[in-house]
Length: 210
Image (cartoon, rainbow, N blue to C red; front, top):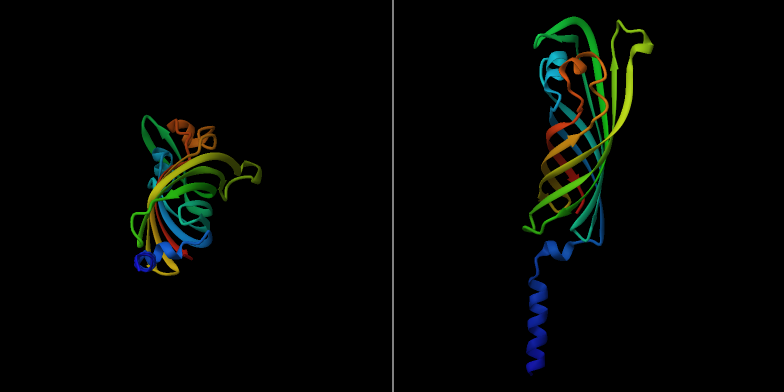
């Protein structure tokens, strides 16, 4: 009789386990789309050329989650903006009225950890590396004067995922990236003494998958 009661209690406890815990998959592959706003470390450079030091990126990627806890994420995004050629003299910024279009394409690979806060809210932290392409063109340039370079950098981020539905999640996080070696070799970034293409960004993700 005691064995029967004990067995019944164990079954009851198992049935009472949170549905989210029962639903954890050994491996879950989850595509996502996102938009972010980045405040660039090179404040003077971007403010001189574009009139502000922050701009949006849009992109997407895929996240692979292992047992609901560890994850690897691959993402790609794009920034494109047209401003003006500029120079800095005596601490003052002067725009020249010559159109300049800059394009940044980051490709990032990160690994992270998801905390078991609740079935509906999962805080996470991650860190990784990236490959960052920077292009710069102007209608007054000879094609040989255009810029097209790529450099490595690193990124860290932290935030939380909110489950809106069994198959839909909303992620919100803050990221910091450091990308040396692209800026600072010429033009307004050299005059400003700024070499880092990275910055701090706020990101919102739409995730499909459990």
